[in-house]
Length: 467
Image (cartoon, rainbow, N blue to C red; front, side, top):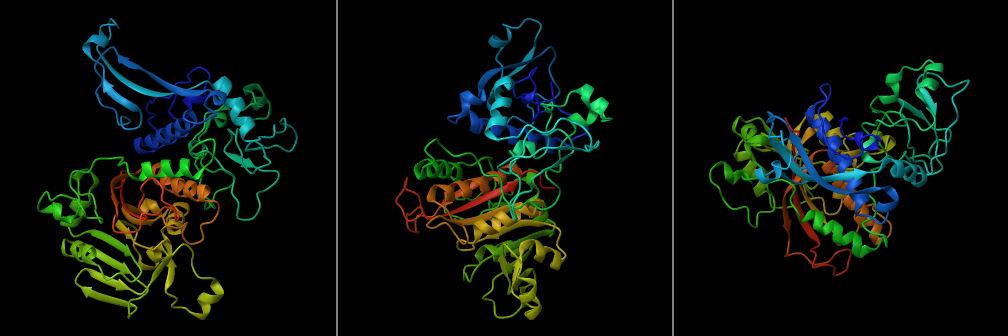
């Protein structure tokens, strides 16, 4: 089998499955697998599934001897995973063990032309003078570049300011895709190492910060609010991973998490409980004038170093108790303009990444946020600047009665943006373990009565790669 995330592109193997590669960490391979699976799954459920040649496929993976790892670590990515029964194994003489699951199949002879057409890819230049060993030029009319295999891609017509090339998530990390115009013989003639044709692509369109998130495909062909809202609400109401011990109360008892909106996961596999017991936990709490700090006080009492950021605090920095700090700072999705910052050197607005650098903190075990509709842009900033990698768990209150600060567009495009942000969390290996629907708030969704939705939810995620 080919390493996951690329094998479905190969004509000799178009079924999405998984095999390990020794030189890549397992968590990275699993992330690639999930991103690939999610990308193809969205296609399989779309109106373009037939044209793209993508569909679900159920089957078995069988073994002549019992594998060391009977339950593989990708078990929660594919659909309906289970061990094969004895009756099923009897159909395969000489095989003693097997897995049954549903995955995705991609007919590459159909998919690749569809992808090229959908991306409006211009057929790149034949290799000739002026093309060096590291660069093959491609460009597209819509600033979305597909079809590369070499480590660097140069666009003949750069994107407009503030716009970044748009790539499907599985292409951001790896591609094994034979170049449509570059054969191995042509590579040899150009002096290219054949291995360049198969290298993972880690730097698309130039390295540096991302400028925009990857929008998910529309929920349906009509691109309607109902379609987008139904998908989004179902997504935030469905937990993705089980957590058996929630809230700091669980350190002492197995108390029920019912009606407790601010919850952290204390299962030993995620390490937070150990960090709390060893007094090495750090929690950041982002708020706007809330008087309810019971969660912060509880976490501080249990052993966390707690930093509460609130612009309404009277003093710049206040040590409320041994482990509880209050800071007169507001978390924003951008830092102040340099000219304004020079006039106000003690400005109380910062990006979270800037505060981490300023405080000398390299990680946050828990980030709690109640930002009254600023959460969407703050979350987008955390994603684009890779601050998420420094966070173990997220507990966010999200507000749905209006688009939020500096989020614009039609109602359906707003919800698509929200959904895409949360899918980015999933692609970063964050898993939703608790969802709380606040029935005390108005039951409105973008000022409409839709699907019995509340205007406010509290969602808790755990970073499954957190160390």
